[in-house]
Image 1 (cartoon, rainbow, N blue to C red):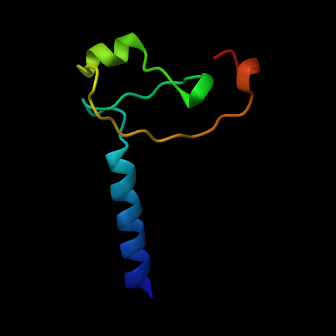
Image 2: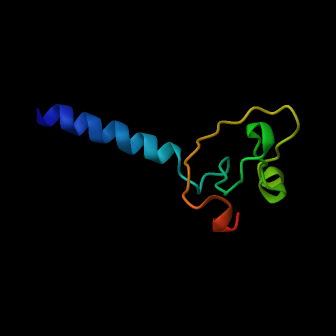
Length: 72
């Protein structure tokens, strides 16, 4: 049983490490969902990541409470 728990914790930690915002290929920012479900990547992040039109990126969406009232 302890072996399973250690394996689960190890997998969870490895997944968190993959999301590390300090890595050179990661940006974390807030965005407002536009019409058609579109979001925009801020220019500074596009430049820092050297993103060009047509590049494929991985997106993880975490909904924040507040919507427009939160000042995004």
